[in-house]
Length: 157
Length: 281
Image 1 (cartoon, rainbow over the protein chains, first blue to last red):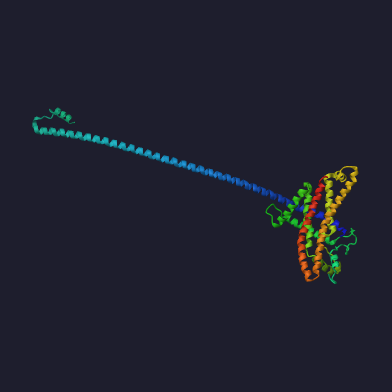
Image 2: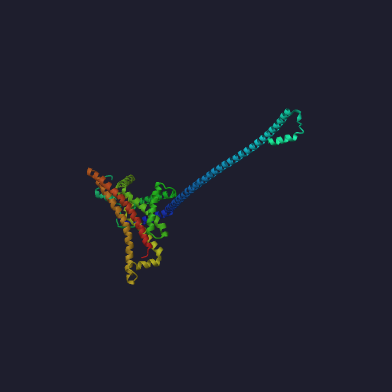
């Protein structure tokens, strides 16, 4: 419990150690601490931003999906419409073609019947003339009675 | 000790005598020609260990993920930095005061922790070395707790006093500080000048003496109790052995609190006193 020169020596050591710490220990540690604090703050901010971005992207995806679904529906309904239209058109065309064909066939049949009738009439006239000739023999002159025959033919029509 | 077993009082006195440059116990209360070799050895060795450990952490300090040791040192740095920020309101002064407070905290803690080393271990080794070198083991003094040396403890508190004086002059200027010395705390009146000045001087002396004495007293008392507990075991009886184990364990566990607390108090008071030097009355 005595005082001696240890006091002075200890005082000097005290300041030397403090100086060393101030020079070589404190600044790097404090720098590292500050840098780490900044890093953490940046990391947290980045995480927040990423979260916000994610939410935004999800919203966008939902929107795009909705749009795609809508346009797909549009495409399908317009395709159906077009298809039914095509079918209708085809049906109408077919009807037209059939009607035309029927008309043509009917016309042809009419013409053929007319021709057959005329041929038949000719033959009947000839047969009648030939029959009459056979009956009358020489008394009938073809040139003389041509007018008569023509009238007969007219009547048969 | 070799030869005759010492009496209890001889044992205690032997343990409380410093190894100094004179080779025997100091006779005068104050003698500036004497220096305690053991205190200087342990405080410088532990001081170097302190700054080495701190430097080890500082060398590898990065902003990446810290290891356990680095994390531990960073925790202390942060604790000291926070305390300093709250007490010393000058960023410029903190550049020196905060590292100083950290050093003081770790250094005093480790010096105090020497109290937990078995009280006879290092002195007995020293006695052996001293005797084998041809000395009288009865004069092989050694005290391992540097903070239980009044000179060492007051040396550190005087260091704090010097800092207070330095910052008083630096912050307030010579005239400002002299003005404060004579006008605070009672006010500016010629009749009050001597009273104010006396109060200021008493304040500085009281701060410094109590600062050093508090640390010294606690560590000295703790060391003395360890010595007494060792005496109990020295009786070599069943009661002494059991008493030594129980009392030694309890006191050592309790002492962990004291050594940490005293180191913390010394650091905090250093900051408070330096902080006061920054504030005008």
